[in-house]
Image 1 (cartoon, rainbow, N blue to C red):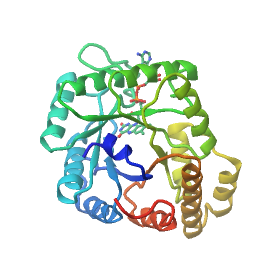
Image 2 (cartoon, rainbow, N blue to C red):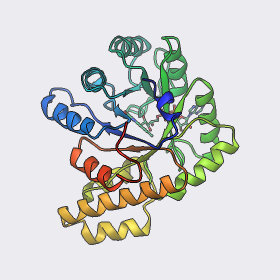
Image 3 (cartoon, rainbow, N blue to C red):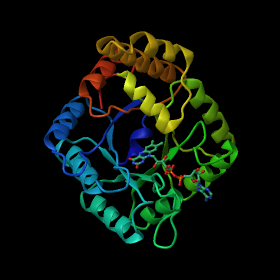
Image 4 (cartoon, rainbow, N blue to C red):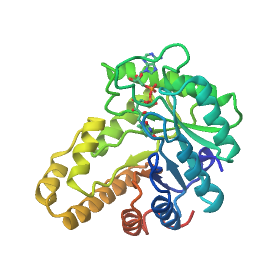
Length: 291
Ligand code: FAD
């Protein structure tokens, strides 16, 4: 099923995210986590693409398992910056052959040597979106950055680039994680004003250990509200308490989003079925359990 059709339904949708095994790592523990996550009946499940592109086959393998064996719609992430155009073409063919209809088209992070892609490589995700459209009727998602992408010096330029990306054929957007919902509300106001009208799926990351927050902030540069800082300061050294507080904070964020009219919630479940189940349970009368 195409995610654009899922998003067109009247109800609030809830989706999860998993990451595939790194090269040389066993599949079984991840497949076990994915199977259990699917028992919570997400509306769809996204599967990330390892940085540098080396684990692309694993992304397709897990996404195909989710869709074909577990009956849950899957969304395969695909990055393009560290693969040649030919490698990207072959990755799209693999996704198509596996029967996956949804792709999150991403540029990926720039190579560490600082070289900007030229020639045989794609420069921007918008070029990948246009390329995917040549392969048939995929539903295509893309990333967006409510606080601005790190490489773009002005938020308005970032939104102009986003508009160009959406116009190249994007069906929905997923923002970078945020811990303050006002960041999303403000962004939605600005993009709608610029004519970007596709659905935006709000991505929430439950922080269940103190290390995770520093990594999440390091990678995204997102603003951490004082209320959340206090939680990490108080409970960061107590794993069980931090997990409980992190699940409660994520639940609270989702309730506020739904109360303010957001219809699509994505949880960065990070292969942790217990966290997903707790949040699902907390929302049982708010989102419901039916697919
Ligand atoms: P783009 O949309 O290409 O934007 C990159 C930069 O280029 C921005 O600063 C933008 O303003 C600028 N730009 C775009 N077009 C133009 C133009 N025409 N002219 C000038 N400047 C332009 N990474 C992974 O490796 N694997 C994953 O699975 C993954 N999943 C992600 C999921 C989400 C929801 C998000 C938010 C990010 C994810 N990422 C993932 C990280 C992503 O690859 C990086 O953030 C990357 O740096 C940018 O990717 P993009 O697709 O947003 O790039």
